[in-house]
Image 1: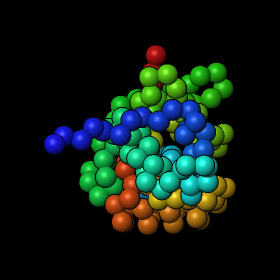
Image 2: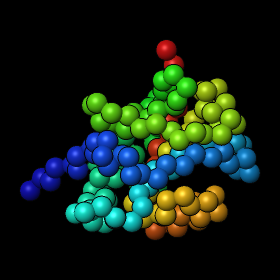
Image 3: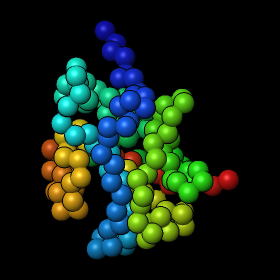
Length: 157
């Protein structure tokens, strides 16, 4: 039996995501721009951890991300500039995900054409988590293979 891939979620789900961007300047590989997408614990009527995970897996599949334990794939240029915003084409036919006010250094790095390490974490994360909590989350999620990753960049006209 062939199972269908989870659907790519729409704006109702996307609005509840925790999205964080940062520039790792201590990496042995040089500066690395990161973008984490995760979800807080279920809180809406009818929302379950299983449904949230299915939606996140739908996004990961549409983006071509792979499990963190594997090689990080190049998923192509999925970021674009729309007015003053950077947005991610996450595979939905009608909607994109806006990067939440990235730092000037992160934006400069990305707009220079350098790659972004995109991570979708399957475990819940608190809204408003600080940098230490986010870095710990990424470390735990990737070690437990509960994260999907890919390298992306800004579309060049």
